[in-house]
Image (cartoon, rainbow, N blue to C red; front, side, top):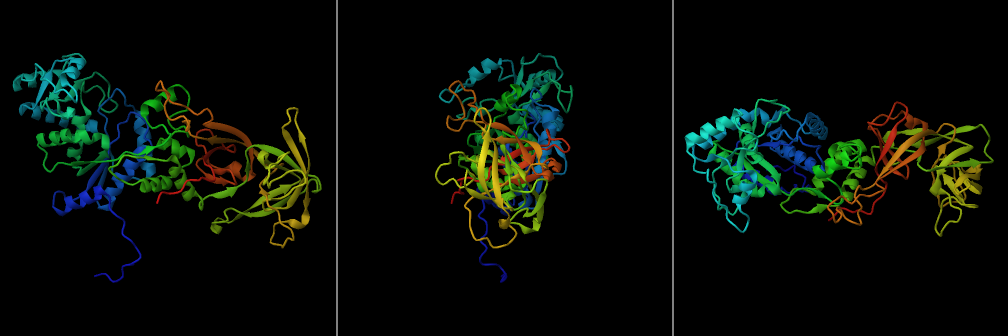
Length: 558
């Protein structure tokens, strides 16, 4: 007995998949745990895939097992190298380690052999019905299917026809290979599914070697079995496909075949994850690519400034269950705030500037105020913030006719400039449209924020950027791509887009920020957390993406 166990540490409760793995190891079904992540390279991965990657990788590591990363590249009509490269980058960035990249297409020869095994067993046949006829013959949930007139072809004829299919004798769609299972099954997936089709397409990995390609429901279980996967963990939409998965691996003579176990998909409110919709947004120029920061592809989240640690925290909070449910996007935002609040330097940036002139401050003089980078993390140190007669402040920090309980700057009111002095507004100037352009103020030199005791108090504190050294910068503010109040889809099925999902500001930043590099992250005081865009930034001219605003009413569910 270990007497050194901390009695205050409560062991983490295991999810239902971990409990199944424990049983399989205890009864000797498997000697080790081998999991996989098998994306199809027909688009960029999104936040839901991050859940699958991190869960499958974490499960393998928990049991000192192995994790395979494999492309399910059996449909060349939708696949290309751009998607392959992006997916590899995403998996590596999330921290899922793998020995090498595997491809389902590398197993095409073995899959063809498995199809021959099924034909020789009388469990597969070549069918000449058209796609529409096959659909008609299959029936529906209320009507049993009827058998194809080609179902009882001899083994010998099927072997010849299938080889002719492979050798390119027939045109696309002229024949298919179907599994012979049960046309009266209550599970439509078991009604003689197609397992091979003719498709003359150049494959990104195998080129023009093949003109027949296996269907997903046939290829996927074979890939798992060939690689020795023990637990094929997938989302709930594949639950009805599990009988076919088991039929394939059992009838293709694999010993100790893998188990398929399903868990709930990750759904986020008011975001676009469907590849079809994202592709439309990209092709129509509504977003500037699959990595547009308004999307929740992993590439987009990374470009916006999200960290892998925040995504892992989010996935852990969501957990693994059998129950389908939706998560609020604000939970993801909560996670990035929690991850960045102690990591980021807190800097001054003015997003919507007006000029502030302190009339009684000496002309030409520039002071340097010592300001900590992060008051919650002293290890980040401090910096010198420049201060002079001419500054930039936020437009919202001055009002001509303020409402009650407005404690920032208005005529006759006194506020503190963060880390510096008390100032009092005295007058202002506007343009021809009545917009304030310049605020004039006086300062009290006895109120410098340098540790001295000050007799009077002020209720408002605002930040600033020194006027002569400030650098202009493009600052991008993001909101949900979907209009939350109206829902995701319009009546015609199109996406209900938020016209204000991107607002571009030309603001002023501290001089130090002009040297920021791609993916550098900062907290802009009072404005939120920002990251340097890796695509549009240039040396000395960073473009900042807002990752998330400063505050939210979101609270973790108990």
